[in-house]
Image (tube, rainbow, N blue to C red):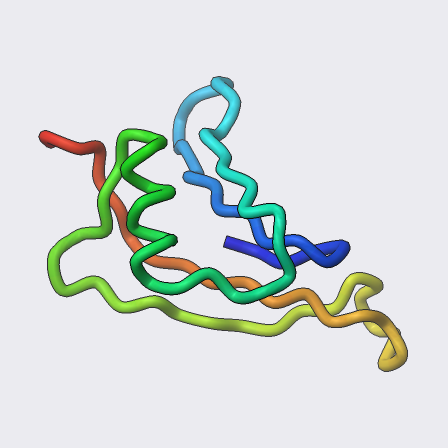
Length: 83
């Protein structure tokens, strides 16, 4: 999940494929609640792994530029629903 240009979006990184990553756009600058994030995963056919914790990190839009806008990134391990 990342926040860029004033909007949060959630996406599932698919490894070993050229398929497009499933994505959900929250369309808001407000940080989505845990329930909203779980619902977004459900819409995409995924769910967080039991006991998985969200990890938050900060990056910059322009690497190495201290005046660059901040990019917030969150990650959690997921699985396909029913897997």
